[in-house]
Image 1 (cartoon, rainbow, N blue to C red):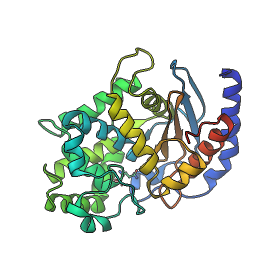
Image 2: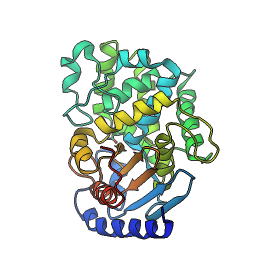
Image 3: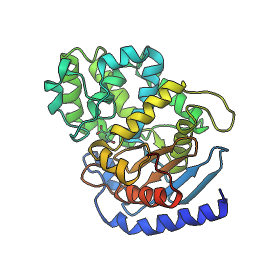
Image 4: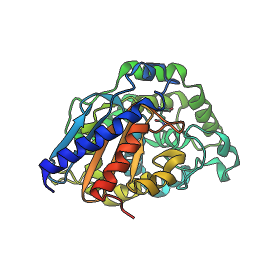
Length: 310
Ligand code: GLN
């Protein structure tokens, strides 16, 4: 890859997508997220040798929100094994919004359909072990600090408190899961862990680095150290394809064709097997909760660099 040319193309694609920040709106159901400037757009690409290309608002910190569901899943799988995890959460996509409650009652044994929707991610948070919430969060933070190489990674307290105060829907999901026996740990503690891991603050550059580790099947680019078992990395990438963009995952697979996971703060982590990790930040969302400009940018970049995996 000619880095100079690639940087230029990245900038062009970002500029072409910038107008899309006028479409959609920032998430407001978490009041703190509504304060963010909706016209930001940043993108970063991390290559297999650790080189990072970036343009726009790639150093602006934002909370991971649903992108963090990948990392809580990794920890839950490593601590419990896949048989245990998939006894409590399914592997199938849903056509419903990410915070939907409707299928919990109608699905066999009330298992959430997958770990990328809120119900599934709350069930996954319930499986993360530790003596208390701090220790359980540390397991997720330690993994992410290792993957990003940033020992100072931390949570955004304002976003965390804002979500905790307003999360009635997530509370409803968690209590339903508790009643069904899917959630075996304390409800409020598990929700606290979930809100905290959703509030972990990152930049598009860090998200690109995280995506690159998954692209390399769980190996750190700089040191060659394995931080995620290969099978766990494979499971995550598969969920990113089938469920990562919520109920727009099918459309995204056709238009962009890259495993990706989005969050309601406007971040998207994309991972192109063996080739690169991509981090995008554009806080204005479509009605399904995906960054409008971010999705457009990835679509254009995928075409330009022929990144589609299908
Ligand atoms: N913390 C958010 C919530 O539970 C995450 C949702 C998302 O990013 N889609 O609602």
